[in-house]
Length: 301
Image (tube, rainbow, N blue to C red; front, side, top):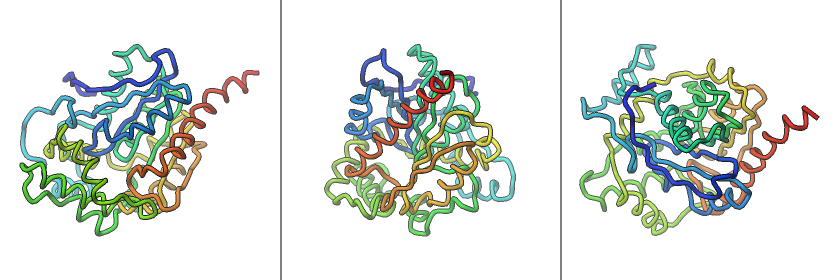
């Protein structure tokens, strides 16, 4: 765990007395990227919902300024099995979520992570099983490189940059292009819808150097299959069949590695949370959380 305290910006929704669902977002994404309607539906099912900005993102603390992240060099090192230098790890980021739970007096919670957030959630469930009621890993991976390669268009847009990184409008156009590539083909958003939604995020905060450092942490994490086999929390893996950034094979592999994990494949879903799927996703997750708490009681009876 990182010895340096990091401020974590968060939002709590619902009754604090209700069981907690902790939402962990993906690479470079903010707490506001968990759709409001999705959160409201989880609250309506009787849960307290916590969403937060990961370190180096949104309004949370930044890593100390240092050398520019050299992503291509890091990927080459990882491919050769060499260590990757990074200012923090996914385990440190899992510690941020745990620290937030401690701060709010939450002894155990349902952990839900998307993309990189799914990786962080996996680490949290494996390293701190006593704090995790259930795990939901969405559009994520085990770190197995053979099944995790993005499509060429997705890889290209992920590693590209805005034409003018200092101009918010240029950044917004870049992100609109990115989500046009990685989004759900069966549930497309219009360009104007993307521009409005992503514009709110960019104007709230934009930290490309932080996103690069987060990506270093992902690269350094490597293959987590051995770690995943130690997870004992009831686990649900959700993956889009049309995800070009983290292919379906990665979700299948993740479910295969975690003992007893259930896999839900959503046709036509890419690497985003389209409005049309929010009720279905919220129901899947709430049902899983309900079952994970009810199962031990039933076994005891």
